[in-house]
Image (tube, rainbow, N blue to C red):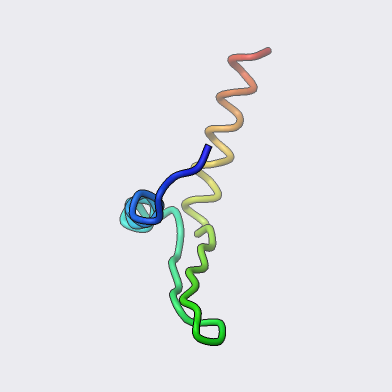
Amino acid sequence: MQISDPTLSKQAAALEDAGYVHVRKGYVGKYPRTWLSMTPTGRAAFSAHVAALREITA
């Protein structure tokens, strides 16, 4: 399954607004690129989500 570039961009912006990721945009040669990195808040939220899923499946 694939999603469109605008949909992916919207989701990345929502995660950035929530403080879960840091978004950096730039170019590699003449091609635009976007890099996402998890923030400490995002890492904690992800860990809590995974722990909840493990609890459900246990």
